[in-house]
Amino acid sequence: MRVLVIGGGGREHALCLALARDPSVTEIVAAPGNPGIAAVARTVPLTTPLEVAREVGPDLVVVGPEAPLVAGAADELRAAGFAVFGPSAAAAALEGSKAFAKDVMAEAGVPTAGHWVATTPDELAAALDAAGPPFVVKHDELAAGKGVVVTSDRDEALAHGAGRRVVVEEYLDGPEVSLFCLTDGATVVPLLPAQDFKRAGDGDTGPNTGGMGAYCPLPWLPPDVVDEVVKTVAVPTVEHMAARGTPFAGLLYVGLALTSEGPKVVEFNCRFGDPETQVVLALLDSPLGELLHAVATGRLADVGPLRWRDGAAVVVVVASEGYPAAPVVGDAIEGVEDAASVPGVAVLHAGTATDADGRLVTAGGRVLGVTATGSDIAAARASAYEAVRRLRIRGGHHRTDIAAAVPQ
Ligand code: AMP
Ligand code: GLY
Image (cartoon, rainbow, N blue to C red):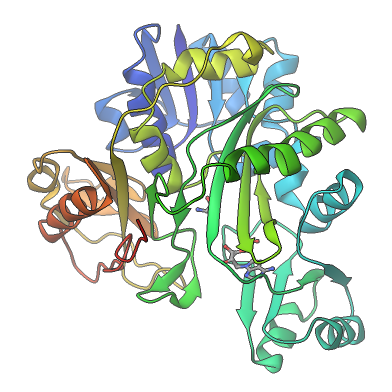
């Protein structure tokens, strides 16, 4: 089958690598892709998802990022007759609007943080008083991981919400887990749980980012938690979305905090997470193309149990100078081949481009996702950091503590 992947980040590079391992996938086209993706796929400019699909004629379109999904790309593609992996705009609102997601969770009885919606300074002040510190204030729209502040500073919380509609949440304490659930709108199949590191700095300091690293699986997670989350979160959400006439089909990303009262939802996303996808798909042994095609065509119930590789995977994100506030682009990236020669390592491209002289340069905030597999997390981590040491990007930075203190 010919697969068209929409997007050009680290997640899409990971998707393309996993698709390339599926013998039923005969051709991969990525729009726009990136220089790393160009090694496994044919890359074409992204005019619009529909225009590209009409040119390419794919058997399956995989829409990677949230922005086109929230804007209705999957609806347009489906209306034109394509098999699409990715939810409709109405279903993608689970990510596109925090307030909508909260309503759905309340209606479906899904455990999550208590919340208040505020649109005026007075409402915001009252919500902060009711919630108490630490304050969690979220912009009610897509914000690439940067619309959330968690702070004990009331003035900072007020400033973050000034002049816009926000959701104020009760603070959830406990380790975070990302659980990706494939669903065709009826059947739900969880992937392996992962954990990502959202803050820019070591020790979970600094601003929130899209994610600075991740690992998979989670040796410390009690084995029944995945089933519990499928039962208490994913299935009721999918059933409720179908009942309200906006079925969710694609990947439901369940972001959880494991609180003393049990798992509670921190956020829903409507697509594969980045960088967790890099580690989850590194361990997937089942053919990804067949799986995503089954989701796209409502046949997920026919797919047998997923197969996973033994061992673990770790990804360390190398970011450009200034990320996340103001990423500097155009800096030379050196050492990629040397880094990729470390056994078990794949250097996944995110914000990269080729300049006029053919040199690889930075083109976004998160530049590379150095992904390693190994017999366990310590081994995968050692390989990932060995590869990171071989990279040279002026002003580049990464966290040094990804998967460093994972309880076994
Ligand atoms: P979100 O974009 O909603 O995932 O929020 C980004 C990050 O902010 C999450 O991964 C958490 O680390 C943190 N966060 C969000 N909501 C809460 C909450 N209710 N309590 C504690 N931390 C939160
Ligand atoms: N890693 C977080 C996200 O993809 O939203």
